[in-house]
Amino acid sequence: MIRRVVRTFTILVLLAATLAPITPALAGQRDVGGKRSFNTFTQNAYVGADIGRVLSLDPSDPWYFIKLLEAVTTTYYELLASLPEVRMAGIAERIASRKPELVALQEVSLLRKQSPGDLVIGGQEPATEVVTDFLQSILDALDAQGAHYAVAAVTTEMDVEMPMFNQVTGEIDDARLTDREVILVRTDLPPGYLRVSNPQGGTFANHIVIPSMGLSVLRGWCSVDVFVRGRKFRYINTHLEEETQPELQWLQALELLQGPANTSLPVVLAGDFNSDGNGANGTYTYDGLLDAGFSDPWTKLHPTDLGLTWGHDPVLADPTWPLVWRIDLVLYDGDQFEPDQATVVDDELGRAMPPFWPSDHAGVAVKFQLK
Image (cartoon, rainbow, N blue to C red; front, side):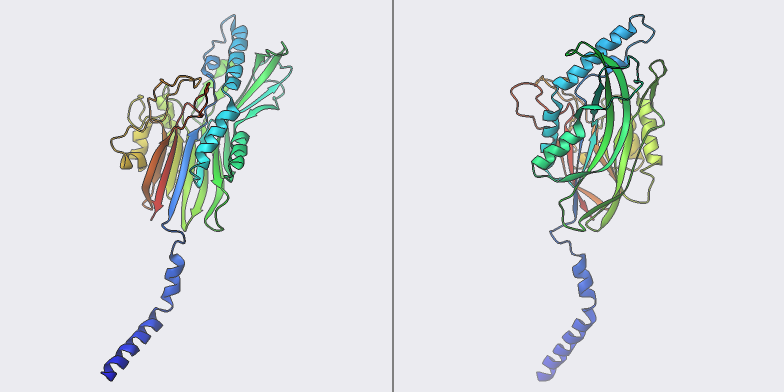
C-alpha cells in the first residue's frame, strides 16, 4: 500500500514538473473578461436635405443660374431645418448605448459658407465659415454621454461650393457642402485590448461626373487595421453609388475588392452599399460581394427577417412612411469571425415635432465572437 502511494505521488510530481512550463502559456492565452468578441456599428448620418434638386438642373437652360440659386437656397435651409446637432446627438446616443469598439459613419457632412459669395460654381475662394459640422457634433454628444471615441480614419468625398440667396442679409452667399466617411474607435478600453493602425482612405476612380457643372460626385472608403483581444483584421467603411447607377456601383465595389479588401488579413466591410440585401432595388453588388467570399451576419442570424434599414421620408416627418430596403450592411471575410448578434437600430429622437429620427437610415449593430 505504501509503495503504491509513493509511486502515485512520484508520478504526480513528474507530471507537474513536465507541465509546469506549459501552464503559464495557457494561462496567458485566457481571455480575461470572457470570450473574445468584437462589436461594431454602422450608420449613415444623412445630410438632411435633397441635394438631387441641385444636381438634376440643366446648365443649358437660359434660367439655369436663377434656378440654381433657388435650388441651393432651398437645400441649404432644408438642411438647417433638419436640426443636424439634434440628429447627430441621436446617433451618438445609439452608439453610446451599445459601446461598439469601432463605428463606421457615412454622409458625415460639413456645411460652410462665405459672405458675400463669388457668384460662381466652385467659388474662387473656398468657403471656410463653419455652419454645422456633423462629426464634431457626434464627438461632442458622445463625450457628453460619457462615451469615449476618437477619429481613426476619415475620407473626404464630394466637396462642392455653389451660390445661394441669404434669406437674412439679402445677399448672394456661397454654400459649401463636404461629404466624409469616418471610422471612430473606442478609447476607454484597458491597455492592449484594442489597437488600430495603418489608416487608409480614398475615392473611387469610377464616379459620376457632370462636365457642364464642373462637378465630380465622389464616393469612397476608409480603413484601419485592427488588433483586438489577440486577433488582427482589416476594418473598411464605405459608401457606394446609389441604386440608380447599378453598373457604376458594382465597379466601385470591384475597386474595394481589388484595393483595401485585397489583403491577407481577415476583413470586416461595413457601410451604406446602396445595394439591397433582399434583392429589391435592382442592383447586384450585394450578390457580387457574397460571390467574392464575403458573408452576411444578418442572413445567418435572421434568415426570415428582412432587416430593413432605409426609407424614412426626406424631412424625417412622416411616422407612417415605411422602410423599404436593407442597404446598410456589415459583411465579413475570414474564418475567425462567428456572428453572435445583429440588430437593426432605428430609435426615434423622442420629439413632438420633426425630425422624428436621426437619419433616413437605421443603424446596424453586429457582435462577432472571435475564434
